[in-house]
Image (tube, rainbow, N blue to C red):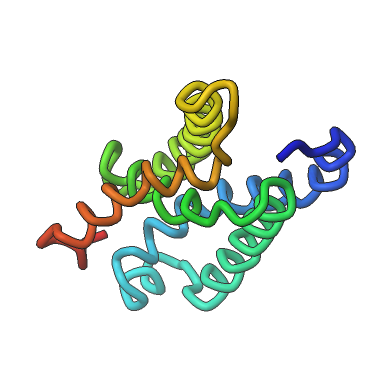
Amino acid sequence: MERESSTIVQLAPFLVAGMLLALALGRQLNALALGDASATSMGAKPRRIRALGMVAITLLCGAATAASGPIWFLGLAVPYTARMVVGSDHRWILAYALVLGPALVLASDVLGRVLVAPAELPVGVVTAFLGAPLFIALCRRRRLSVL
């Protein structure tokens, strides 16, 4: 499925706003991960952080869905994968997810074009095949509540 370059121009303000907001919330999300009481004692405002986080998520997910269609798997799998790689620091999780998401889409697109050449598999099908083992592994982990 191809999109016009005008799609990027139309979605750029939402993507930029969502990314900037998400990156700015990194330190506050770390404080919130310690619990509401600890975050409050550190000067954070849990309700405000959650509300701004929801705004960032809405902007980024809405723009991604508008641009690429419902490849919802990426929004779930990439942050968990980033967390497994870098640990629990949200600043690093956000940075790695920013790189891993597009890399996964690119790899899925290339695989979809190569596996059944000269035909093509849709990116969503390839990401589903890549994501199923990841979700099974996540569900089977005993430390699922830590994620």
